[in-house]
Image (cartoon, rainbow, N blue to C red; front, side):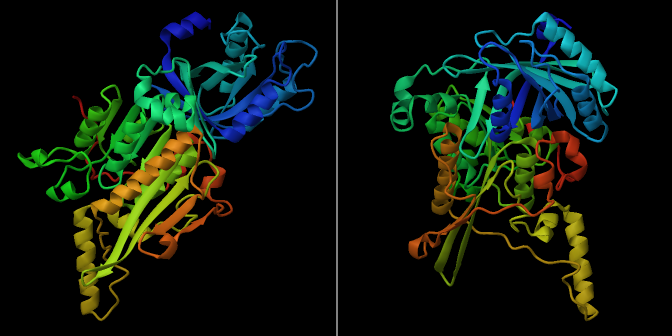
Length: 494
């Protein structure tokens, strides 16, 4: 199928990969530079929404000696390589595609030979795969080290054109875009440019950050990121403001409580961001991190800030990191005290990223609390009644019900924690700094701030090790899902 036909009929697509995969890929594809091409098969998962799709490259199926023809300057696949890829497809739920380089200085536009190759492999692999899904990518590097990428794909006949590549590594999150945004107000970003370097402001402008939970920690995080110049936000929260939120939710004011119903939290936070930066793009979703419509938007983002106080959100954030290659910074706070004296103000930040342990590996999830968070009120009432009946029979109530206490928070501390997690996000997005450890806990009332930090490993065989980049094709192994009694999420229109 000719390039022009694809271009004219295509929906947008985003490619995600880890820094490790990108390094391996570039080492292969540019090994014959500057004048000769090279190629490899890629292994990828797919998430498709109504508007676009995201492909997550899980690995490269690298060529072995003799798999490609080394005697010609272009790419020629030998049969043994094709058969090895086809046999992989027979036993896998994810897919096979092609990525190849063009010589230095040659645009990353498909040639007629590339058209023939893609027509062939699209049909060939469909005979071994569980779905007719195929993507083909082209890369090049100029003399100055500038990277270019294009791509196209087919999902059951629907055509896609690759617009962006997001690379996630421990030190940076990088978005390569075909049409990047340009800074038109350099004075606004002068302080950031002087401290972090020239590219930092541009990277933030082209970044998309999801803030799940727009209350005590999410609101100050948005405040910091908006002032830093992040260009696009996706705000997610199912709740309306309450009067008690005024004490800790940035962007909430007395005017919001004049008439009922009070506004949604995502509305007030959107208003705050746009007051700071009217040019920012803000999508406000009344919904929850585990709902499919919300996930459709999260998988397009550079970074997720998980600013909720629920166990299931922590599980979901970790799963988005390993299945969809969407890195996350999860923040939580806890205040402890009695008889008017506060003894501890504890903050916790966890990094979730491909290759890092999930919330279960870190023992950060109370399974019972997560179940209660997802229960309908009728189920909670029934279980409480069964617990009372058990006590009357002289039995233990715990198998039927256990109360999950709420965690009290106050604005001065949630603002501190939210600003901290936003700061680490800025470092990750710009590639200028990162958290000192993948798990951090601190207590501002303890000596030396009670700092604890460590880098843990995944538990052997955990899904966070085995399903990296498997995207929607790993849905059967999902650890948490939205219950049916929740209202459908909706995107607010303004």
